[in-house]
Amino acid sequence: MSEKKFYIETYGCQMNFSDSEIIASVMKEADFDSTTDVKEADGIFVNTCSIREHAEQRVRKRLSELKSFKKKKPHLLIGVLGCMAERLKDQLLIDEKSVDIIVGPDAYRDLPKLINTANEGQKAINVILSADETYADINPVRLGSNGVSAFISIMRGCENFCAYCVVPYTRGKERSRNPGTILNEARELFESGFREITFLGQNVNSYKWEGENKDFDFPYLLEKAALINPLLRIRFATSHPKDLSDELLKIIAAHPNICRSVHLPVQSGSSKILKLMNRKYTREWYMERIEAIRKYIPGCAISTDIICGFSGETDDDHHDTLSLMEWAKFDYAYMFKYSERPGTAAAGKYKDDVPEEVKSRRLQEVIELQQKLSHKSNKRDVGKTFEVLVENESRKSKDFLSGRNSQNKVVIFPRKNFKAGDYVNVNVLRCTAATLIGDDAESFYM
Ligand code: 5AD
Ligand code: SF4
Image (cartoon, rainbow, N blue to C red; front, side):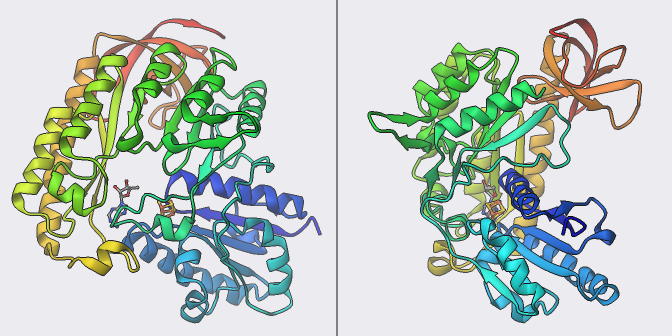
């Protein structure tokens, strides 16, 4: 059977990219080969996202393109995996006639069986959510890897129920993965040459594993990972402001290989909107957490997520968001227009009452401000020296390499004899809004 090939295409968050690596491993166990050429595939899997309507529309468009592949190759199977599969369930089979298989985020182990069913000519679906599936024993196949950085999923699901968010419904109950399996995966990655791991979860700070005699929390896991080797960098995403503890910040401060970069989604700068969003913190609480990061970890980069035009957002609320951004001096931000998702608390309780053109204008203002803040943040780095982990060749020139500093900023510098996986001290000579550009000061840890 090993001549059967599957192709996987991933939309959405880092967690989804990490899930695709788990899916690839399940498929490999079932004797399928992966291919990066969609034309030679016997199965095409689309790992989907439901976070905003636009994400779903992109997938729908792709599915209609894939229909033509099926005309040319009748035995071709098309599978919809992930959050959209979970949200829409068998409705997707009705809407999208070319789809054969529907698999939710907790049912990937069932894929080979579902493929058999589909090969027999029946539609196959498994969207059962689990209270304990963490795929802990699955060794992910590193797809499209640069051999330097890898994701490790440490928990799944979410029970925060932010009013706007579909994730608790598509990814189910929050559960953490056995710490032993996480640390083994990290060690193995280091031994096979990887130099950076990112711990992933919808809310990594609430990681909790109940051991026989004691419980293990996120600071514990982070510290143990940092102790694997000083040359292994550790990152994590995403944190919820309500659970970002001083203890965690102290652990980061104590280990130079835990990266100086915290992603802390604020969503809105208005306490009124935060309450409607069920974020469980206020503007003041968030500001206090930013001050704590700056106190414990000087030089730490802080990035965020912002939603513009949530239900009930007035111009005053929007200005609260802009003023918070100015105050926090975010180094980077992901910015979105509010998209009402069916089935969420906000869709049930509130009217999506900010007109589209107002949402667009506010988003534009937020983006313009963030560009200024990012550029200013980069300008503050000119003249400084950073330890950069080399990832790959610069996209613009073979003579330059691209890597990241601990703050997660992209740094470009002359290639010389450096290669992916090296740590290089780089003097920053100039910058753009998105990139630092420098020359190496010295190389080390070759
Ligand atoms: N509309 C717009 N943005 C959303 N996000 C989550 N749900 C929605 C929604 N319904 C954003 C949040 C979150 C990020 C992953 O996506 O900012 O942090
Ligand atoms: Fe990731 Fe959320 Fe999109 Fe699912 S809905 S893929 S959890 S961003």
